[in-house]
Image 1 (spheres, rainbow, N blue to C red):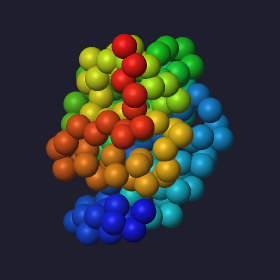
Image 2 (image 1 turned 120 degrees about the vertical axis):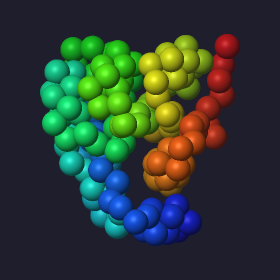
Image 3 (image 1 turned 180 degrees about the vertical axis):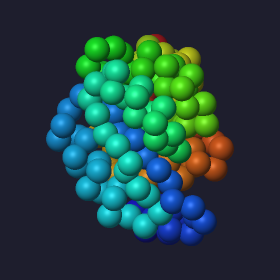
Image 4 (image 1 turned 30 degrees about the horizontal axis):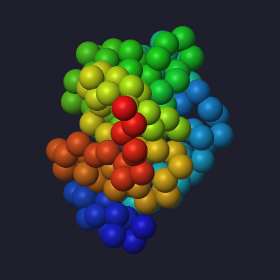
Length: 146
């Protein structure tokens, strides 16, 4: 995790993050990790579709870390709507699902990254760093099953 942390630390600006995940434990765990690192600031969190849209519009986060499941909608539909309201935001999905249909739907919705929740935390940090640098990031653990 050292290399990714140092990349985030050398960033001139603080990366503002919004967490959208139906699982409270996942959100809180991610928040604790992310808020502990220099250069990252979790500005909001929710499990709800409507609240995710409101927070994205009001907060204009740099990155939205979200799950494939959101109360009241799907992750990809929520991502599409967020990008309409906050077009400069970048979406990274944090997901349990490595099936191609999920990955393709996330990318089609405008996602900039897709990280498996089974990966070490360093992968999420690497994804944030790469996506902020303008790249698309796919978790190395993806099998891209057909």
